[in-house]
Image (cartoon, rainbow, N blue to C red; front, side, top):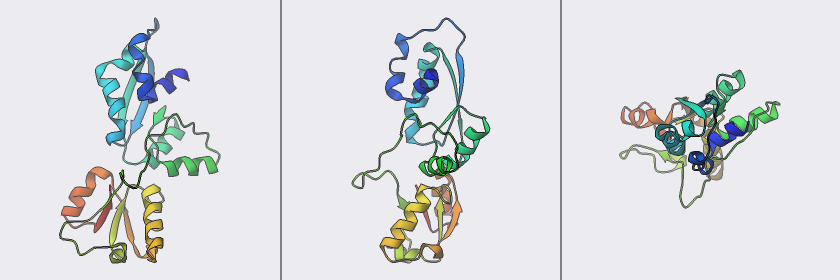
Length: 185
């Protein structure tokens, strides 16, 4: 278990060159949604830090944190970058997830998440989203909950929004092609 915890933290990875193991590398299967949060993980893998620490880390991409949570439960992966809502939901249902390290801290003056519209969109406020198509990573996920809270603050019924699930990488094209009116990124 210590080796798995080691694989998740950027600070711990920096200690990798000091460690050595006489045994064969321990295989660790990791899955993530491709975004900036995984840069330290990819650096450690590509630079050989994991291998020098006696770890054989493979990283595969997934579409959502909810999909990753399901893959962890099934045993397909050892470690995953999971959405907070998936952790909360799993915990409420008795799934024994173990949080190794948080990957995001949201600060309102330095947002890590945005609701995007096309430059020429008629959407100027959350009120303009009624009846529109919005993309979220996962229905019931953190961005979906945040949109509901944002709408409630403005006195808008979020149930009038039409949601589609899209990976972050598909949002710019979906906006350009007018398949969605707004997207969380």
